[in-house]
Image 1 (cartoon, rainbow, N blue to C red):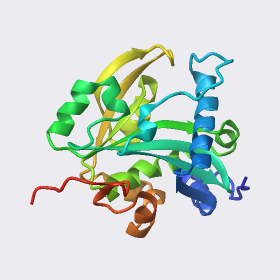
Image 2 (cartoon, rainbow, N blue to C red):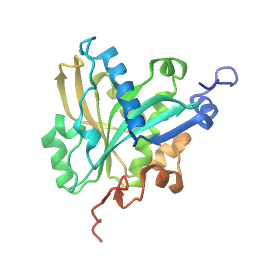
Image 3 (cartoon, helix red, strand yellow):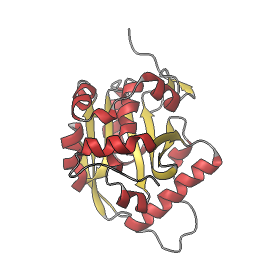
Image 4 (cartoon, rainbow, N blue to C red):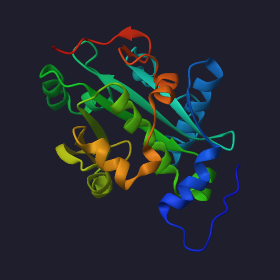
Length: 238
């Protein structure tokens, strides 16, 4: 794991600038990478969810195998520090984690022609999270890049209600559904949406460490006219 070096009372930007050279974003596609994501997810969910301690299997999730979803690893100093799944929702691929919980709300937006990034299953390594409190900001660079790369209209966020203020402050997100009670995690969850129009310019100013170029996004997500490089993305109206 990398060692941080910066001055007294550094800003968030300064801390992330020091950390970013040791950060790698990777699409987790082979069996070893996929199992590493599941192991990290299983460990993390056992800490916060009502899952039996003696559960031996992986936490099942159909979206790990859907064409419009991919798991990504966030590595710090060569070690897997966090993972997140991104789903790209559109008329041809309307389903994701958020549509499972709030099907009517999400389906209405998809059928209206919106192209949506739906992040889910964000989990961190317990030691990395303690060592790098900046990790959530580093991980959130993934959906920011995906929205820009796929020309998404908005980004959905399915979160605990208590985290809503963070997403409103950082991403100008507004609550569009919920709360509903989740028995597994014993919390109220809500669905929030951030509109892409004007957001990237705003984030570039406030959080310059989220900037990216097309080459980086192309290497990470594949061609911009395909869903993670696998299936054709529907054409926008001329």
